[in-house]
Image (tube, rainbow over all chains, first blue to last red; front, top):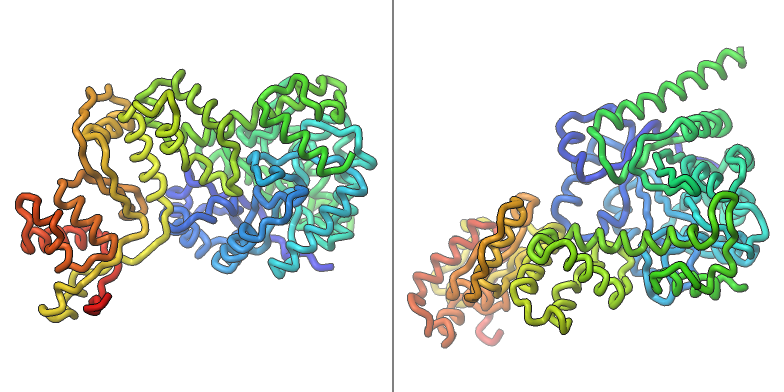
Amino acid sequence: MTRPAPLGHGLGLRPIYYDQILSTRPAVDWFEIISENYMTGGGRPAAMLERVRADYPIVMHGVAMSLASTDPLDFDYLRELKALAERVEPAWISDHLAWTGVHGVTLHDLLPIPYTQEALAHVAERVMRVQDFLGRRLVVENASTYVAFRESEMSEWAFVDELARRADCLLLLDVNNVFVSSFNHGFDPNEFVDAIDPERVAQFHIAGHTDNGTHRIDTHDQPVCDDVWALYERARRRFGAVSTMIERDDNFPPFDELLAELGHMREIAVRIDAESARSAA
Amino acid sequence: MKLAELQAMFQTGVLAGAEDGARVLESVKNSGQADRTTLFGVYVNAYRARLAEFLAADFPALRALVGEEAFDALADAYIAAQPSRERNARWYTTRLPDFLRESAQWRDNVRAIDLASFERALTDAFDAPDAEPLAIDALGAFAPEQWPRLAFAFHPSLVLLELEAGTIATHEAAMEQQELPPRDEGRGHAAVWRADLDSVHCALEADEFLALSLAMEGHAFGDICQMAAFRDLEDASPERLAQMLTGWFQEGLVVGAEVREEND
């Protein structure tokens, strides 16, 4: 079971930052794209991506695969995704443990599932079919959720860990999503992190979220909060030098603020690696 | 409960637009801090907010024209009538101009419909497929006697529109957050395409609109000159058409040229 080589510390490639990225070539190790934003035609999105990928590794992250839907897999979508991957040559392709709609409708959201044996078998089978079609191992992300279902038969972390084993896929551990869901459903986020097989984790996401008092929402429109940094630190210790990126999708700050967050992330990694080296010696 | 049944109930609840009384709530737990109605409401509210955001992003000038309140009501009506069947959110707003034309409330508001159509074309031009413009020098490869049978291919982003004459001025004022000009009910024509990675547009005279429409349909240069409709226009001559053709090349609209066989 081989994980892809770590890419380092990355950011999301978002249109608002195209000019700055291309003119300053910032010290970002890699960029993650939202796949669907480049599954259109040509023009500026395609041209900017070509220019950025000339200098940076790219990872494709999708929001529309609807892996957990009970609708049939959408092979038109998968064909488009595969064509984009052939053009972009991403280090890997990821999407979410979620569904986006049924009966041909799309709600354009990452919707929650009950953690049941039925759902586990269903999603694992679909992940395997997607992997066969794409000809590569898929990286599956835990989503933020706001409801928990009475039907659930196991914890989310047990579901995620078993899914990775059964489907032989990799995982994108979204540390912010773990934190948001842990608050919303009242579980210990450390328990989630500690339960996941380290060999399966190919990437981390971290991000900011919105605190609505009674619940938290994964909005990607705030700086990363201290609680999420602390959880990231725990994950970094457990999983090692996994490729990590910061998601920012709204309320965009000056690019330098994202670079400062990236710097903070690097400092954590350097400190943990130094501690590991000392204890090994 | 089976996963398929749960998902159908969940989606029905979101599409219904009200978390209260949704059948799926029977399967949702209260959390330590929030009741299940509030938590399911996160999905209900996010669905409407997200789709309304797509509409506002693609039709900013229409929003400025009709005002926020009317635009929000339009967005609500569109979302209610038009659950997305698009895997990619990029295409969700595409039908808004058609929705306006079909709506009893909006069908007589030609100014709004034409502005929406214009904004739709700008959005579509932005990420239409790429094609390399043909340099006008390429015409040197064709002998003069072949010219009447020359037909052209155009950039995939190019769209021609028949609009209210004031549409472009209204759009420009809205985008610059200036006071909108008074309505100009006359009819006009516009071309929208992409140049240097940005959507661009220009107003077209009636003769150029007709000639370019015919050329985009694949009619050869000589045929367009012969078209009765074109001949009926003032100042319609092979020279005028050649002048237009030069302009199309200069704007990067032409991406291919070929000689049509007589029986094409």
